[in-house]
Image (cartoon, rainbow, N blue to C red; front, side, top):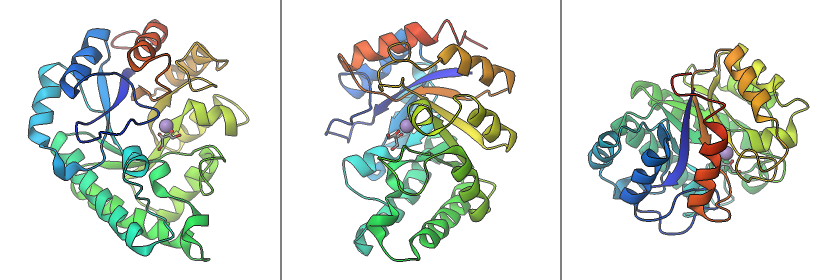
Amino acid sequence: MKLAVATPTPEVETPVPVALLSGTFAERLQKATRLGYDGVELMVARPDELEAREIRAQVSALGLEVPAIASGAVYMVDKLTLLASDAEVSRRAVARLHTLINFAAALEAPLVTIGGFRGRLAWAGGSDARARLIEILGAAAEKASAQGVCLVLEPLNRYESDILNNASQGLALIEEVGHSHLGLLLDTFHVNIEESSLTDCFRQVMAAGRLWHVHVGDSNRLPPGQGHIDFPGIVDTLCEIGYQGYLSAELLPQPDPDAAAVATISYMRPLVPIDS
Ligand code: LER
Ligand code: MN
């Protein structure tokens, strides 16, 4: 298992509520390396404004990996969602998802995340909204597979999503889409709110072969160790089931974005030794 920290790419000027590290993009990458993170999860809003080759060179020069391209900033900053009340917004969001997939491929990042960016059934309205999302995900997963990238759906707590709140619903939706390149991302903050067990959901998704990424944040969305989630128990379970992916810090930048990144790795590194 490896540790990553979520941080935005340079074109994202507005603060993202769950991003860490401060300074220029180059400074943030340097901080990630200096703190001992293995990778950076990049929160991208407009890939067309970025030079993928340059970013790839910058990241690799520091010995960092990019485990995932996160779509949260597209939703939070540019207000685009796959399901939306305005069909034009939905059309632009689908086009943006395809550019995120291209960007991930160019960066050799294996995953593109889909959390709040999927939008809500209530926003889209109509009885066909779920079917529309399934169709969008199927086409995007097909495009991703052609580029060697996978998509990960993220169950979100009930206050943030009306379509996918827990691991069982996630696996059911994946089954409906029926594509090999669509998996799940479980976020401990959402798991703590929605699942009846902090560890069974990881076992269930791993057994289905779809546990491809994990976000960490404590029960109050502060760094691990500052709330009441049992992270040692979760990491023990992940070791036991053979999860070899990333645990990526995506949490509130409090008391500031650097202190939260420091607190996260100080708590998590002893649980997740290098090369574990
Ligand atoms: C939002 O709560 C979240 O966890 C993000 O990863 C999804 O957009
Ligand atoms: Mn998350």
